[in-house]
Structure formats: structure tokens, C-alpha cells
Image 1 (tube, rainbow, N blue to C red):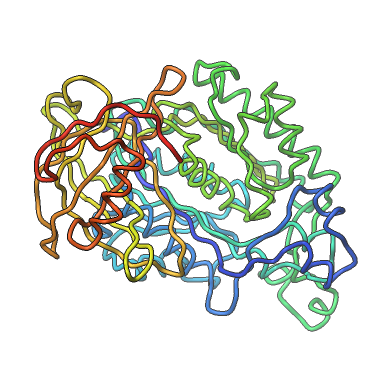
Image 2 (image 1 turned 120 degrees about the horizontal axis):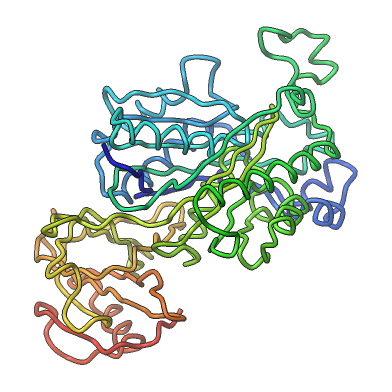
Length: 473
């Protein structure tokens, strides 16, 4: 049994439709200024027909599995945190399992409202530590706008839809969950709820007419309990991890309301510069807010190997949870065994911008080339992927050097890998990664090398070392 469960892959998915505050102004009596002042939200994503909790969860899960360098058949447990399932039963996680082409992996749903991701991280880590599971796909997804009354300006401005996913794997190194606390105060369950639609209050024409199928909340009371619960539990998990608030590199809170986030940060004596906020673009996506924020923080380079990350959330129930996570992925282990990693790059061709991916790397000499940091070029395998909807994300990779063996892709096309180690303020950032297909994309590759990377000569088929340069965005 391993002592830790590291996050080795992550992904997110949101609906294509964007609903701005200006759109809401035409639906209810409100204004952009009123919404931004009271919530911090400027727009949110809203599911359209054909998009469901399972479809968003499937897309996010597929990204996370790919980033972890795994095949879907290697996942032995799927967990889905949601309070908006596709159907009362079977579990929506079973639908996701079928969508991903898995067979035999255990699957179950978890209902803890907006605290679902922290709850699930605790459960997934416990399953790995106990030896009950090895590769866990944990997804948080909600289509909360399904339960929104678009005539109620107090609630319709708050919520959006989305999904986030992580893959957890066992590790001997101290990555993943370091400490966690989850709890609930059932006496406050009536402060935020959807009253009708269950076995206690089945839907009837009268209840539908009264709007009991929609979410309602007592905002003032929820605000006070949320700030107190998130701040107090955060301080306890920080202490349990033998740390102080000053040692936390990034706080990723539940994205419910900017005022709640700011009040919680103030109680923790945490500057907002160390708090990640994307509430303005997605609204409250319930259990999915934290994993979506983690994905975006990683993409923006705000998460580095070894960073201590505080996760904190509250939700209907009332539930709450906080956790300290050590961000990063374990090394290859003694002897430098095979890693499986996926590195993505943008490349421009006749069909527009696409992405390539390299799958396998073997560390040599402890994983770092001689001489320390710098730039290296080597041949590597690639699969060229055409863009979907013109939208792609660039997952950052751990700040770790490796040599790549020469292999060939299914297309049998030679490729080039450019990876970098970039020192910043005395510590490593995420390396910039780029791949390009020489045969199809040599011109843009040569231009990139000459323009940005100070190409120093040599053939693309030989091992090259480029001088350390400043990364240009």
C-alpha cells in the first residue's frame, strides 16, 4: 500500500453556450453592475439540449485520463460528485463508464452538493491508500441551471454548468492529499435546497406551480455559515499538515460568490494574490468549481511541482470540507523506468491550428541531462490531432527534465520535441513544451526556433542543446 495518492491528470469541460449578465438583463429585473457588485460574476456557461451531466463528465474524464498517460481500461474506479444526475438511477458514473469504453471498473455517484470535490478527494485517497483501487478517475460535474428559476434574480444570476476531473494514482512521494476535514450541519439543511422532486415531496402540478422544483437559498445565513465554516476548517487542515497559512502557495476555494471568497481569505490572513478566482467567467458550477479552477490554475502556470494548495468548499446540507494538497506527480522511481506523459503543442498548418502529443519518455542519468537547465531538442513520436471547435488547452508539465528515446508514430512521421527548464525567483516553473511535425510543419517550426528559441544549428535528428533563454509568451 502506498502512503499517498498523487494527482497525475486533470481535465475540464464546460457547455458551449455563454450567458452574460447582459443576457440576464433582458430576462429579469437586474443589471450587470448589480450582479458584479454582489457576486463578482460576469458570465456563466449554460447547457443546451444534448448536453448533460454525463456528457460533460465524459469529456472532462477523457482529458484527465489522457493527461495521466493512461488508457481508459486501466482505470479501476470511477467516482462522480454530482447533485444533478442524468437520472435518479442508475448512477451517472455508470453512463460515464460506458461512454469512455471501460469495462469492469467500479462506479458510484457522490452527493455532497458544492462540497463534493473535497469529499471525493478524501474518499479516493482512502481507496488508494487501502489498496482497494490503484487508478481512480474522480469527476465533479453539475448541470445546475436545470434547477434554476430564470424569473428569480436572487438565484438565476449565480449558477452555471461544468465539469472537472482528476486522476489519482498511488505514490511513495508526498504528493496529493496531505490533510483533509469534511463535515456537515444537517440542522441547516433548509437554508439551501430543491424542495420537490424526491420521495418526500414528489412533483405535483401544485408544487410545480409554486416553483418548488427550483433551487432556493437564504443568502444572508448561507454567507455567514460559509465564511465561518470554510475559514475554520481551512485553519484546522493547515495545522494538521504541520504547516502555517504562510506556507500555502495557492488557495482554490469553492467559486460561489466573490464576497465569500474575499471574506474567507481575510479570515485566513491570505492576500488575494494567492487565491485563485475564475468565478467571473463560470459562476457557481457546484461541485465542479474547484477542479475547473485547478485545471485553469495549472494551465496558467500558477501551480508548480511541490506547491501546497488549499482546497475549501461549502454546499447544501450544509456540508463543508477543506484539504491541503501537495501538487505534483511522482518521479519514475528507482532505475528510471518508463514514464507515460502527454505533451501538447500548437502547430499551424493548412487546416488551421492543431495539436500533437508525445506519449512515452525514459529518464536517463536520474532524469536530467548533464549541465542542468537549458533547452534540448530530440526526435519523438507524435499523433497530430485536428482542432475541435477551435478550442484547445495547453496542459503544463512538471518541471522535470528527461531525454526522449527515438520512436515512430502510427503515421511514421519524424517529429521534434522542444522542452525547457525555466528558473523563476529561485524555483522551477512549469516547462514550456512544444511539438511539431517536421514534414508537414517545418516552416512554422523553423520560424518558432529562430524567432523565440535562438536556434544554434545542427540537424533535427541529433541531440542538441540550446542556450538558456528567457521564455517569451
